[in-house]
Image (cartoon, rainbow, N blue to C red; front, side, top):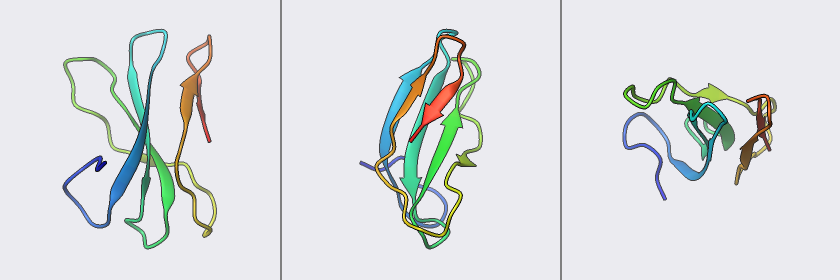
Length: 79
């Protein structure tokens, strides 16, 4: 299931969490750079659009099928 329809590459496999402050966070896989990597984007407020994504993967190896959760302090955990 696609995440976005703009830009280069394919974005898919979204995982979604809402933290204790009711902020929405989405982790997804993208091959925009030529290698499948995990990215995360977040919504600061419900009346604003999602913020620019941040690449979580730190290697040239394939990273796919992300999962995401938020702990009791609001920190994101992405695998």
